Length: 119
Image 1 (tube, rainbow, N blue to C red):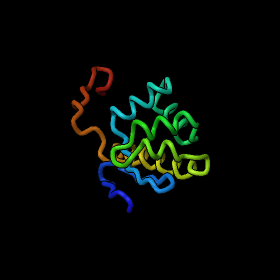
Image 2: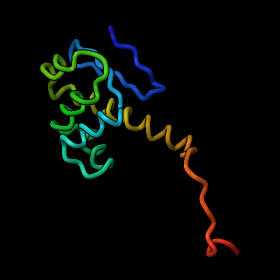
Image 3: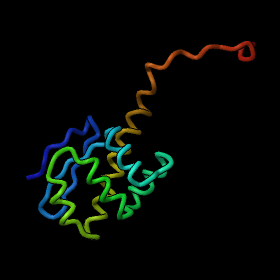
Image 4: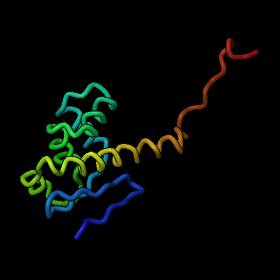
């Protein structure tokens, strides 16, 4: 039975053989994946996840899984699962970027007008 996902939190489902996982793009999880892969930017991280680089895929399952038996999934994963991994990783990151784009940074301080900006 598939684990329930909370789409509002950017969670995504991923199935490796008979193992159901739920992944989430938490800051701690993304930072751990980024550090493990020595990524230099979010773009670099996303590219490596979307391209399902083997090390990136294994690290993402290790650090982004919030529900399910990640150890069992890592034992069972094969190259044929990588297409599903790519979809899951893209959905996971896109969910957070789409949400940020729609809401903006409402808590940011209002921009101050400089003398050059006044006319």
